[in-house]
Image (cartoon, rainbow, N blue to C red; front, side):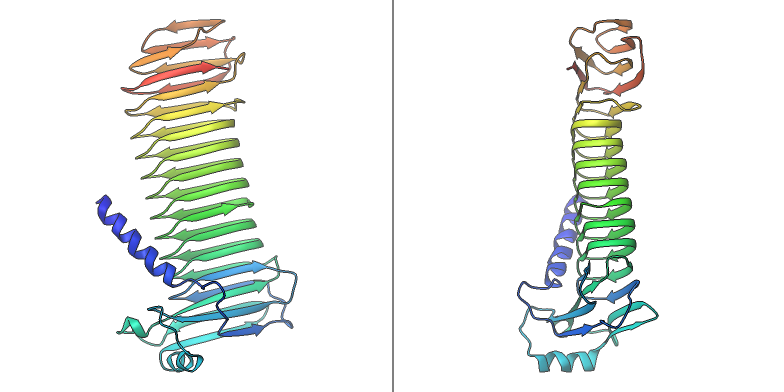
Length: 344
């Protein structure tokens, strides 16, 4: 099953790479929207990438067209195929920009198909509705409601605020410098999130999670990869079904679990709670010294340095009691694995 998923991801990645705008590629056409006040953007394409960027200059749309098999085509050849096989339109009305590219009918010879990509430059305060089945989606410097999906490419979000809802079935996700209410998911790639603030919901079915410099209400889950996180504040809920968890420099409430790997956590400032669980691996936990905690630890073997001012049960397989008079609940379950607790 894992081999099948890997092969599927490789195929999807190959097609999504073909659908990208190549460096130095000239646009097939550019449409200026200098007389329009754009507040909403809707883009649809079946075989190319989409990028939307907030700018202070006049609004415009650049259209890029290339062959599906990477063969160089003249502008006349592109025009002929567009006329015969595609409906391509870019229009603006009632403060809404609409750009669409779709085949007139099912194309039987894939070598004759085209990848049609859009680069959209609009004011920062816009809402978007974007969809492509064969390329990546990129959002930069926007504020508003953003909804977007792709069946075969990556998602890149940079300096975006507002409500963000993005999905990909076959690519990675890169999120940075963004805030407010963000929900991103992928069925086949890794997720990287850094320097973000707000409500974050990040989900992948087949890749790793890399989290850094985050603050807020954060939920990050993967079904098939490891979790790495550093410098996180607020509240973090993270889970993996098939990898290890490494978290450091935390100043947050924490719930972390894995069904198939080790857990290594370092907390410099406690939040409201600490909940860590593991079905079959080891747990290494570092907590700040001198703080009040209610400890509830269980595992095959528990190792810790001397606990000053502790009252309760202290054994090789269970530690349950109050440290420094009690306070923040700390619950750690290692199953058949060991627990190593250090106070620093």
